[in-house]
Image (tube, each protein chain N blue to C red):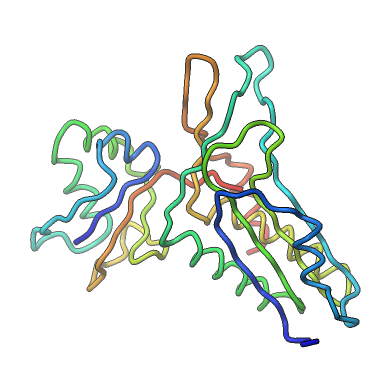
Length: 83
Length: 157
């Protein structure tokens, strides 16, 4: 699955995007965030407070309990501050 | 001239001209009674006593930003009888005084145009994937989301 990171999530992890083979027990957006948090110090820092990390599945806002299903792209980012 | 509704969403690095965009929504038409134009600008400072703001850098999610803004315009069209709307959001580095965002709404009557413009801005702030980084002397930091923006978005239900 293609994973994208933006703003301080990107900076903490140290990359903009990556392709990851997901373990079988990762079924939801929240599962994936928890899995990513175990991948190293930068990831742990990015996901230290999961409540402030938002996600979009195939470019549509998603919630922690949203199933990943057959989505091809997921993005993690802080709450938005545009406008 | 066509009287088909005009709905446009753009993400761009370049500046925009609010008057030109508003004129494009009404050109050749006689059924529009109200046009509301809102422009959001880069403001010099927020923090009294703090280091002055040098610039804001807007990061965005290129694939999603346009799609999400189009969804917000669709939502506005479902709620108000609009004859047109233009939403433009810039990305990149802005200095105080620069334009950041533009919302133009057109309708037969003013209530729809006013309300739809406020709705679009409120939802855009909390749903469009853009992030602001502040640059001040000797420091840079990501702008934190404001609860007041969430409250403003939620009032529309």
